[in-house]
Amino acid sequence: MVLILYSLINTYPLLWMVLNSFKTEKEFSLNPFSLPTVWHWENYKEAWRVANLGLYFSNSMRVSVLATVLTVLLGALASYFLSRFEFRWKKWVSALFLFGMLVPVHAMLVPMFILMQKLGILNTLWALLFPYIAFNLPITIFILSSFMEAFPKDIEESAVMDGCGVLRIFWSIILPMSRPALATVTILNFINHWNEFAFALVLINRSELKTVPLGLANFAGEYSTNYVVQMAGLTMALLPVVIIYLFLEKYLVKGMTAGAVKG
Image (cartoon, rainbow, N blue to C red; front, side, top):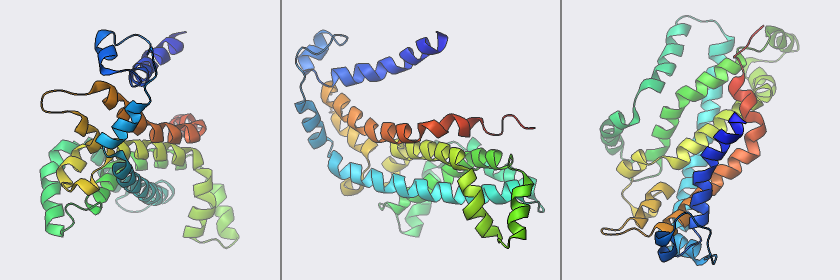
């Protein structure tokens, strides 16, 4: 009962946003907690036009998918060597990766802007790709390495006896066994990349390269905000995250709890 109540508390704001996205501005102002008398689907068409979501969806999807794939791939490789091999300075390398979880994103905005400017990739999607990967690698490595540490060594020893090399063991054995954890970090990375606002605001000034969070800011005018159209835009921006989550949800809990109990 406690979990059901907690779920309802978390679900209600989303349901409230979706329902109000079908109202008129006047109807929302009079009673924001009532059901729509008439379902105004044109709000979604207006939101798509005002926020230029067609272009911004394309930009966000390209950056989010590419950054997620690279982050998960690099994180899996790093986690494999940190969890399955013994080498000098292993603890220091692991601590260095985990230290990245403590670095606040906003403290890095100005240095990142200067760096991207000197590299000549400011106002390109590459300027978003590198920070997205760097700032999401620590949590990716933390989850994957915790999962991979639970694998018995006998599996790799048998593979070596069959003639498998290090990379073959990684691709053919470790990665398939790590699917729950991979699904977990895929969801987390895609959500973080899709919703990221600070780096996109600072590093991208060209309107044709802006992402969805920047497009949603178009609803806020100088003197007023069209809330119902804004909610329609937020609802559409939420759909890709929900679809990814529902597709990989069955692996999420298993991947997050992996490594919590050993023996």
